[in-house]
Structure formats: C-alpha cells, structure tokens
Length: 210
Picture 1 (cartoon, helix red, strand yellow):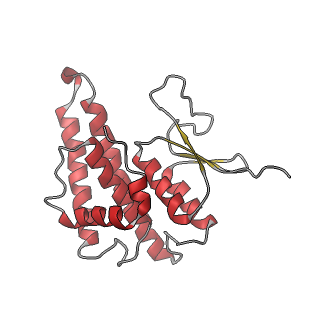
Picture 2 (cartoon, rainbow, N blue to C red; picture 1 turned 180 degrees about the horizontal axis):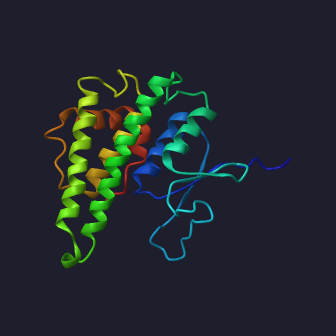
C-alpha cells in the first residue's frame, strides 16, 4: 500500500502568522507535519515555495503550495468540517476576515518597529517608528471597540478573528513588551487570558521564552 502523503507547514516558532495557522490546524484536528525554518539562515531559500520567501507556507499532499496565512487559514477551514472558524454566511465571513486583517496589520506594523530598532542607533528613524506605533495604537483601539464586552469578537462566537487577535497580542508581548496595551484595553487582555485558559492550542503554540 502506498504511503499516504501528509501536508507540511513551513513556519518558525516565533512567527505570529505561523502561530495562527498552527492554532487553526489544532482547532480543526488536521494532521500536518511541521517544518521549522530559520529565515536568518543564508541557506534558507523558500522562494521555490513562495516567490516572496515568506512564511508560513502550506505544502498540500499533491505538492501545491499555499501562502500567506489568511489564504491558508481559509483553505483549512474549508477542507475540514470540524468547528467552522469562518462563518458560511457571507456578511459574517467578511466581518471575521476584516478583524483578521486588522490583527495581521498590527503585526505588520510591529514587525517594522522591531526591524527598525535592530538597525544601528544612528541609522534608526524615530519618525518611522512613531508612525508604526501610531498604527498599532489605532489598530488596538479599533479591535477593542469591536470586542466591547463580548466574550469573542464575532457576536460572542469563537472564530478566526479571535485566533488572529490572540496571536497578535502574544506577539506584542513577545517582541515589543514596552508597549502597554493592557491598561487602555483591558477587554483585549481578558480575551488573551481567555484564549490561553480555554484553548489548549494557544498554550501549546506560545513563542519560546527568550
């Protein structure tokens, strides 16, 4: 009997986008081999899987590759009937994807801050950093307003929006601990605590302690 091929996820242990997909895989009970890559390694060339050389990348059992994380998440939600994370009703689905985009956009800005701060001090642009921090601040405020006093972001229903938001908040704690987002947004802090306490996948995918 031929060996059944299994999907592979190319990611890192610190990527918030990759973490989102790892949580989705766990929530959907989908078997997938995890391949850890080191983007800083000069021998790490992912362009034959993703022309942009970015992770995460999902290699399907037929060899086709999918990227980036919103595309992968939507695909995984469709291939397994277990626990829908994106509603089938169009308007509800758009609301979830919009909140996912907002959370991912905050991560994008956080990554740019981190990269700029890693440059030699005399080459850093305080204006550029301030611009990205401004995006993070406004993004968090919008996400907090969307959540309000609800348990989850989509009218109290757990969805991909919560997964994306939780991975984003965890990344801020991991990479930019100087940002105090909890004080102005205690409901987001409650969301992250709830995810960590109630969803095993979040505890299992937390970034490694530095």
